[in-house]
Length: 303
Image 1 (tube, rainbow, N blue to C red):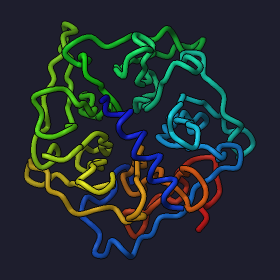
Image 2 (cartoon, helix red, strand yellow):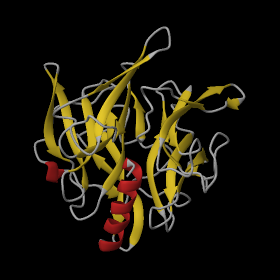
Image 3 (tube, one colour):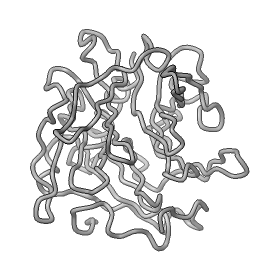
Image 4 (cartoon, rainbow, N blue to C red):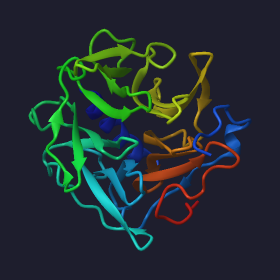
């Protein structure tokens, strides 16, 4: 079964069952000293499931995933910051409306390209591929599907552009270490792509399917299902090697998805079920002195 569909199913079960430029790379002394707060702009939060936000560099636009409470139908929505508030989300020009399933938007740091996943090429199959759309002065252009070896007959999900020029993503393609692994794709000057599995400790025998990397390339948040539920795990790069520092403090009895680090890497947005509510976005500090003006265009998070 495709990675994102598999994740959607377990997310639904969890929801029903539960009610400076760069930041520090050192793990915090006590994970429990930093607790997540709900981040729910009034026009964004609905009875459904909101996750996987991404912002334009100027903070005036947000693209995110919206799904029904069962997390079975999901689509990309876009909201604008108007007079300090986010507007009600709508389908952006490049996206297809339901029943086509699209998700996981990610804007490059310069704001000129947006990656996302889509089933538009084969809506009858559980096969998600990575697409991108470039932005010109008049707006977004036409979506382009990435070629092999980035996309395969398996699913590719959660594309995240790194400052190093590589594109990070999850895939359940054959030959990995577990049910899902984290990969990095590099494009040559001639346009050809090369894909590599990041390997342990990032890709493990578990189901590792989403990875968010900081702008300095030294912190990575990985969504991994290690046999109970999907949670967020933090890794830091030390002496050229990744080392896990532990699980991000979040509800242990529900799933977390859609991590987004702040530009400084000192705050993290993610989504999880919220008691009787469906999925909501949460904000957690990763350092003692984070950039408190991020996320943009919104007041403080609420308990």
